Image (cartoon, rainbow, N blue to C red):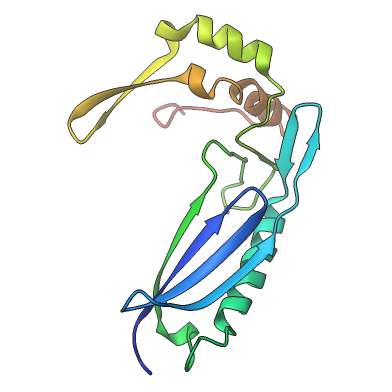
Length: 165
């Protein structure tokens, strides 16, 4: 069989899942691998290297799925990846993680988030989405900002806007 296939990757909180579909939309390969979290007193982190290992494990399972016929690896034309929103990490210029991934529900900076929420008009960001103005407020992600700054300072880095030297 030489039908093209597409792979979908879902990076969840507890596991990473892979599905491979053929041109008819039939699942021809599936795999999954668990993800570990570190949780303590509001902290919720994951090891980004664990994501990489889980991706390899899940893809190997999907490619070896009994539902598959022929070599799936040669038939995959594209891969789509989705993950939990609001999760972040810092990476170096080569894309290697420098920090753990701070998960979407990490709550270590609640006090700072409340302060940011109080400054809402001053820190509101504007961007356009399909020619409709949409307002995004840093306060929505304010729980993470002070924590991000902690990581940045701990690594001896500084944040800058693209137009700054």
